[in-house]
Length: 303
Image (cartoon, rainbow, N blue to C red; front, side, top):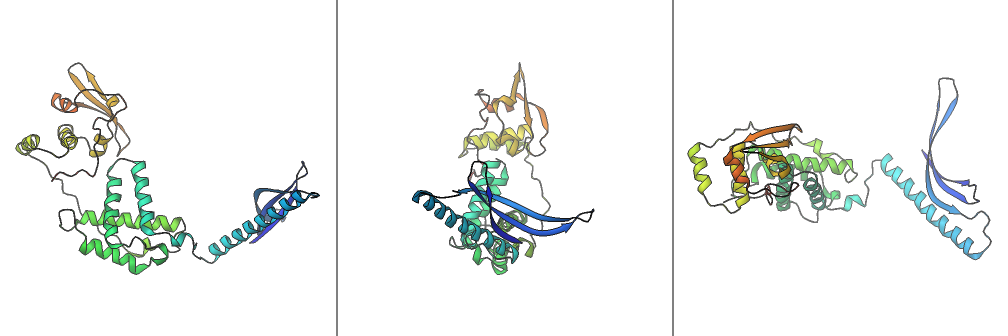
């Protein structure tokens, strides 16, 4: 591909500067040769016949700028053509990039997806130097992270991670590598170089009535967490649906109450009648757009 600077005379007398990307030619079905070109207009202009010192100065400065832009465009093409690293992006630190992705998840949703990203970040901080750049990432580093989650990573209670936690956390790490590759921070997709952990079959645990009664009487560091947990037990709603529940979705119709909500996991509208005991847990009605369980966060843990 040829990348060249071109000029075009405008009706107002100015000279418009643009870059032409010439990609060769082809022949159409009628046998006519078609030249393949793209154009990028720089919105930079020259005086056609500079007379004053100021016009001459402006033309000179504009040409210096345009030549610099042209050089950058050619360098970008060469980097892509020969699979060269973007030297600016490759010097960014990996942990900073992962933190930005984690923050994006926080803004995008309120489900446990963000919680898993956040937990993965805390683990990575234990084994990845805060100064490590993308330029230093290689297969050995990826295998080191895999080995950490497989053998060394512990929960807050100092016990080994479950199989599903290993699966989830390492997949978040791989997702970050894929994102970095897609955005030009890496020239190799290291996420494809190593297999993920196998996902274990989930085993659901259920509370018997006496256990639930004891929990209802127990002290809790976070009252809103206890209230949300008991409401989940009485209603059967998922964490994600409880966490996003707002007062507009709670309907009181005489002695009967129901919850109208859009299920986050399936995006389907659900209508759920709840018991008086479950309704009492919610307390007094607040503003229609306010969260019912205000202050509830995924990272809350009761010890």
